[in-house]
Length: 508
Image (cartoon, rainbow, N blue to C red; front, side, top):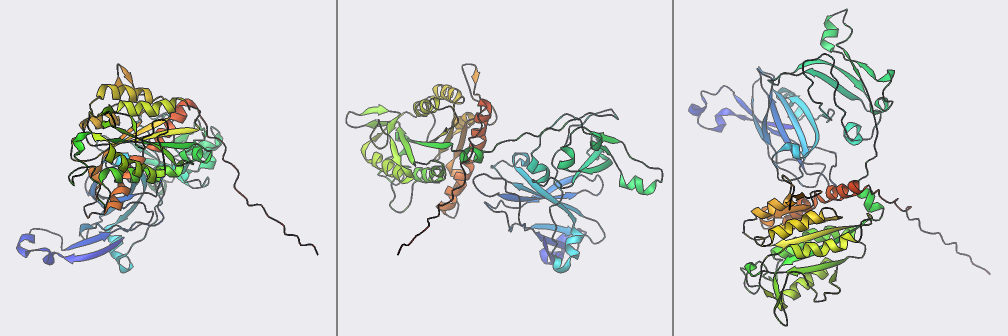
């Protein structure tokens, strides 16, 4: 953490500042190195949140946030914190670090990476006004409050070994006990330390801990402890990861479905969302490449079914909501994402954009394949790119509820300026999708509007990277939710490849 100073006289008219007490403002910048990596497809996307502590009530209040820096474990944050500096006061600061997983401002929706405590005086007083501290104390878990008792029994809870000790079984774990107060000013009772290795012994004489209050211990000669805490049970469960299944050979089957309804506009006109600009991709092309180029790495044959919906097909003008972009309904597979793009451009020249916007046929198309492979060897991802309001909402809901029992996920990317309120309902993050009184077994839909990811400077590569990160972020957990529900374990990973050694023999 670096600090710089500005005189209050340099910030504006002296008359305007005459009622303000502080004489100096400090500009604090934050950098981090070797943060935890919490993402599957990329590195963490860190943000730093600064809290300041009130002098009277000791409550922490949020002061500000840095920007989010994508895909790095060593961020140098550009956004600075401007703080009023008082030499005569102790100004407590707390820097919390999170890995941002979505656009939600709610910090509980993101992965907590750790925190650093210091005072503004420490920063200012450090050599070169540069303070470096390790992220040494991370809150792993908070129990519920058990009220009106001196003999609480807390509920069992689950915590990952990584969050508890990052795989170091002998790392010190500190446990603090507080007397809860409604106003937030909880009274410190005491603390003790342990480790994963000690806890793993389970309920025994080794896991009865004296709760010590260091301040009381230093003042009172007869002080023994402030109570004891006893471990009642300890169970280690091996939780497999998304990558364990991939290593074991599970294939990700990727299918794309593209909206060919007339609301997209005439593809020959620059105003159309399907306009084929010779110099840059249109929104459909960017969405296809952004998601497809990542997913294709998890499919060994790189052959992808590519479908269209909402168009009149040659030669008879039949309306179809499930047609092969390559013109071959018996074999709709395209070779890689480049093959999908070629088939998409060819279809634009041969079909007539029409309508309506029906999703159910393409969802049911992929569901038929997913229903035939339920052993965990394959998982299906359907990408739907659309511009408009859905026309078959009831049928689509029913299709999603049925598909939630299958090894598949659905990504919907909305392009263009339309309102996509109905898509948010399908997303199911807040309320699970239902149809005819039945709720989806699990959340399998992720919707995002592409306009939220367009880089203001016109950097399309950055726009595509942002889109891919958000739409794919939920896939590993959706994948795991299916495997867990069906009790499917990953297959053993094959042994590492070792090239054979050829002995060259020469005979004379």
